[in-house]
Length: 516
Image 1: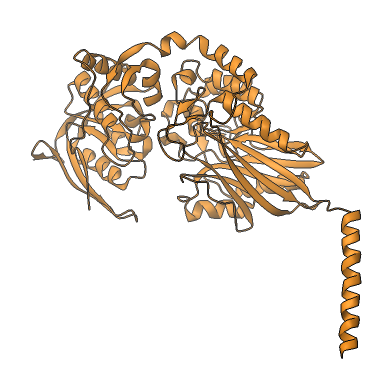
Image 2 (image 1 turned 30 degrees about the horizontal axis):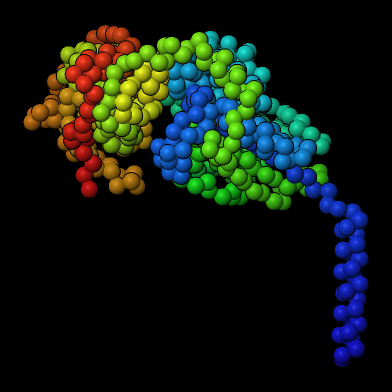
């Protein structure tokens, strides 16, 4: 018995030695591939001082910092294939981006080496003609696989429905993208007139199959679905299409790990990115037919205390911002303290904006969508550039008569918090929302008087809400509409007037109360 065991052990040892020698002589033919992800930059060209953890107080981001991190990262690949993609929300959000109508961002993304960008709802901010002009200026593709022209059914010429790239070592990568289907409710309707935004469906699966038939080794899908909020039907459409990699958003303090879900590698980029981070997905691939056998992800901080900004990009940033510098630095007023935006509750900035709207129009009620407030206010001097960061969208004032029943209906929608609460002036409302889809409007009053469903109220909104934006569709029933000045100009003048008496202090006044 001992002899037999010894013989088995000897044979096993010999086999192990042979395998080791063969492995050393013929190393694995698996390849590495790296996906560099940017996006959610919101027009940030310059670094910003981070206000929240994990980078609170640090000087972060900006294109020169991003360029330095990407160059160092690419050098570490030692010739292994890679691609640089953006998941969009790049072309608007700051004075730097807005005053050049997105051109400065496109030029900097060209210099960064971007190969493709998902066309998100933000990319439609300046309208279709400007989007076409920016697409022509770009050295990269504006990806969208679910947008078509209403009349022809064709994909607009300035969008690319699918892209095939050859990053090296014989690898072929196919790219698709899902523009947010709710885009018509997330931008002014005039910006997307004549376009259809389809929910992912069978056509997405057919595009994936077509890419595979074209000899693509990997199919990557860019989306702006949230990892935690994607619905079952939305994920089923993605799973049915079966790309190899799907990019989602996360809203976590720390980057969540890469996961495999229904055979798809799922990675994320932070919805709060604003150029503060670069995400890298590292994949180990088998020889054809390609399979992903190993995954890894890195979220690299663009921390200017740790890196030296890239000189070439610094020069380009200076060139692209020189023409708008004087306008950005124009003084508007001063604030006594820091004030933060809030999506799901009453916020200081929402009160400031809606108060300005009432002062301008003399209406009874003013509404502001929380999603239209994109930045915070810092204590001290407040410039026109700061105002563009807080209110980057080019909205006009609209005054209307709105029936009380419609006022109550929009407040019920606000209580659902699907697009955030409505910031208000002139009325107060209370609601309940348990976070599990159960919500209700409890009260809505002007002073001590309940909103009368049968009465017509004078209401001030921006044109985005007047169009039913953010799914506040009852505003479309408004009567006797009168368009006014740009909303941002109204707020600018209001801040300037308040600042004549010293730094402005803002207050929370119980206009919006969430009941426990």
